[in-house]
Image 1 (tube, rainbow, N blue to C red):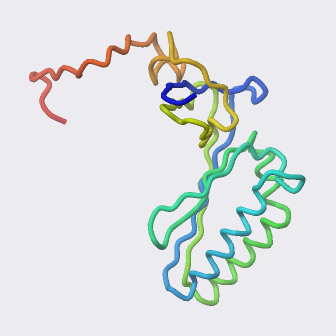
Image 2 (cartoon, rainbow, N blue to C red):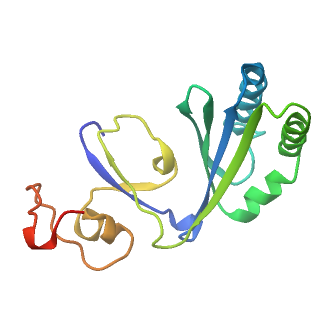
Length: 178
């Protein structure tokens, strides 16, 4: 796998769609740092492989955006699995703790964004991953980017791809600068 390029394809078992969730925690005051860190560790524990891993969770990655802002990007089989997990413990326990912390101290923030990737609504390309399998590559099917898989538009199911040549793009001076 080293030094190779792979295009991502949605596994047939997902029916062409899946759900992405971006969860973020932001520390507004230093006193909230340990609370946010503990909450992050609890989320990591709940998403590890094993019998307690939520049904339908395909992959979960921790991300750091800045010194006071971190979160997770999670891939779920479907929205129903995500909602079932969100309405049960431990998620409901974390949410109650976050709401109480916000009500009393207002020293940190938490948010989530949910996206549904429908057929033709998600594409990915991976270069030189080695043995790493980040993001959707952890559960997707990877193949050589040939034919329609050679371009983002093709991977999204759009019009036929333009041949990738590796040559520098030509700028049309009559179109002006963007």
